Image 1: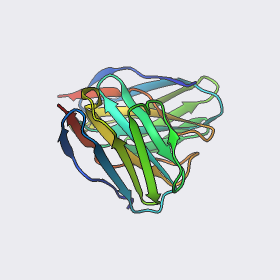
Image 2: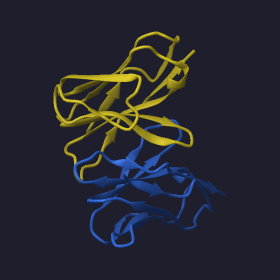
Image 3: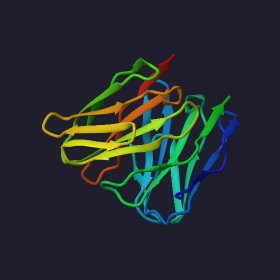
Image 4: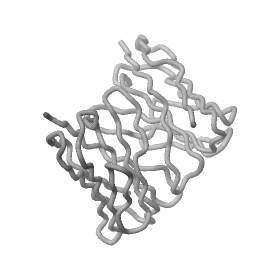
Amino acid sequence: DVKVTQSSRYLVKRTGEKVFLECVQDMDHENMFWYRQDPGLGLRLIYFSYDVKMKEKGDIPEGYSVSREKKERFSLILESASTNQTSMYLCASSLGTSGYEQYFGPGTRLTVT
Amino acid sequence: GQNIDQPTEMTATEGAIVQINCTYQTSGFNGLFWYQQHAGEAPTFLSYNVLDGLEEKGRFSSFLSRSKGYSYLLLKELQMKDSASYLCAVNSGNTPLVFGKGTRLSVIA
C-alpha cells in the first residue's frame, strides 16, 4: 500500500513565523504535489515536483516555496506566515503524470493567528 | 486553461441511486478521475476513465463521453457512509490533475 505521511495533523503558528510542512511517501513515486483546500474553492495546486531538485509553480505559489532534496520527501515552506494562509494543506504523490492516480496524505490543518 | 463544473451539493435517500455529473473543458484530454473525500479526511481514488463508456466497480460506476466533455459518477444502493464530497479531476497532457470544486453528497434516512 502506498503511504503518504505529513508531519503534523494540526499546526498553529503566529503571523510572520516561518513554517515547514513535511511530506514523505514510501512508494518511490516520481511526482509529488502540494495543495491547499478551502471551503468553496476546492483543491488548489501550490507547487509540484516531477523529480528530485526539481519544482514547478502551480496555480497559487505566492507566499510559498518548496524543497525536494530526496525523492521521497517534499517540503512546503511558508517564509512568513499570514492569516490568509490558514487552510488545510494536502500533499500527494503519483507514479507518473498522465493516467496515474494521486495518493494523498492525511492533511495538515494550519491556523495562523 | 481548464474548466471543470460539478454541482455543489446533492441530497439522496439511503438505498437510492444518485448520479453526480461533471463537465469539463480542456485541451489534450488524458483521462478523468473521481475521488471521494469524507469530512476532515484526505481524498481517496474511486475511478479512472480515459475511453468513452461506463466503468463499473461494485456499487460505484463512472461514465465518460469525451466528445461531450462529460462524466458522471453513479452510486447505487446508497449507504449513510457514502455521505462525502466527490471530486472530479481531469488529466490534460503532461500537466498535473485539475480538480473540480467537489460535490457534497448527503445521504438521508
